[in-house]
Length: 219
Image (tube, rainbow, N blue to C red):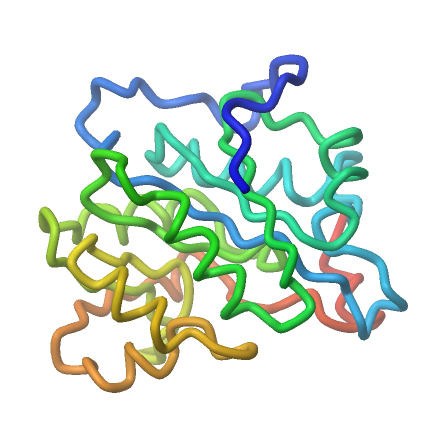
């Protein structure tokens, strides 16, 4: 189920100014996967981990905005009601994934389904638990967008990572193969030669917040 715009107080733009939708990138929708329950973090939902004094999901949305995504869909799952209550996500479309415990694949399917019927040409997929990936990497991958058919991804020392750009022509096939925690991995591997890799290792660090030890990366 999708919810139109979240009714929350305005998000501060001091760190991440909101781009002008007329700047030419509004056809690419940011798709933030933020449904994880943090099983290896003692059951703490990743979206609600604290970063810079606020929920991590706010930081991730700010990064997408600063990188050039004028529209953002956020997929919620674990403690979704608490995320809505605590996080300030103005202007975002919030997407419920009741099957979030099945893994990231279910969240990717829910997110892509929420884009059906929109005028988006592509989705820029990012993960809530990668705060080391900032707006510079987002902007670089967005620059690789080709209307409709694009496949592109950030690379770190030549190895594919996030964010990943999925042109609308690929959404149905990606959703059909997105199972468990693999997300779009199987589809991207099968279409490796068609992917534009955008090196971002000089501007971002692709670590995940998965365990207690990883919390050192949060401020």
